[in-house]
Image (cartoon, rainbow, N blue to C red):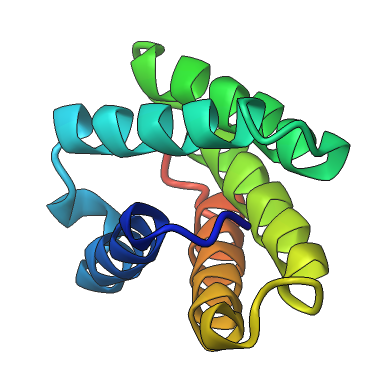
Length: 120
């Protein structure tokens, strides 16, 4: 993952937002955050980060569908969690804890949505 202070701030704010719960994040804020991450990863020149960017694009599409498809969003979050987890070991030491937290949150929240059967 990139090493500039902006990405450190983005990582911290993303973790904080997810810890607050998915329903507490306004859609506009989620779209802005995912767009910022997507652009950073697309411009990285690293294929594995560009794969994450493509999944972020998929998540953005899912977030704009009406009605929202919770299980599909959950699958996307889970995939992103897995992709982030795979990148954690290669990240700078000062980012590994944050990336591990992000991965865990994405996997947990994704799993909750994947198994949500009440149609929301």
